[in-house]
Amino acid sequence: MYTQRVSLEPIRYVLYGITERKTMANCRRCAIHGGHAFCVRRVPVFAALDDKELSHVASHIHQRTYQKGDILFLEGEPLHALIIIHTGSVKAYKTTPDGREQILYLFQTGDFLGEQNLFENHNASYTVEALENVITCAFSRDSFQALLLEHPVIAIKTIEELSKRIAQLENTLKSLGVRSVDGRIAALLMDYAERFGAIVPEGVLIQLPLSREGIANQLGITRETVSRKLSRMENGGVIRTVGSKRILILDRQTLETTANQMNAI
Picture (cartoon, helix red, strand yellow):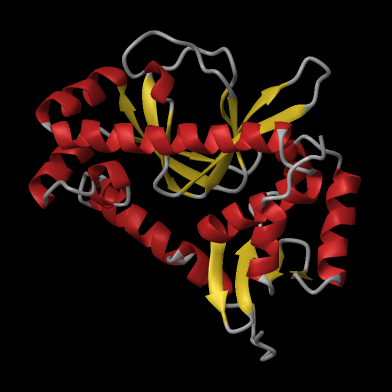
């Protein structure tokens, strides 16, 4: 195991691959040139398009900005657009009958949402809230359907992304019903490591997308349980907390083993 200490402050730029200043500069560049090709280029479903095709796609985009805590749309509202996260991150959640928040997904730069209404008139099945300042790019349903007809590769990529999302939801349901609490937390940290982590000499540094309360809402447990279990992992040398928003994974193998722990029958 590595024992070298490293400075952790610059990791934010490694994690997100682009500084806020650079992102905003590119947004201004998009506005100056009358399009949003830079936004489109960052989305996996459009990765196979050439520059001319990207410019055509970008001509259909409408851009909006949200502040941390703003609601992009509410559960039950009609949806008329496909929304792409250009920069920032959001959470998608449902409210349980007893008023608790159950987080279903975390979306970050390059992810899309609102797919429920791409082909039929369905209302939103969850509420989406900005976890930080967010810029979105939106396509109307008619515009996106036209793109699918013109570029079948986009349809294929869209199906692939939705398949990944189904697998993620199935994994979440498995965690809630089968995994032990320790296993749920470990599995979530493994997922965060893949999506929000950066390799550093000591292990993998995760920029947590949620607070302890948010993690508890995602896992369906209490905040106190999350804090207690994380403290136990830290005492065991598996992780190290770095402030309130970062966790350093020190022993990935043990974390993987814990992630596979099931409830005793």
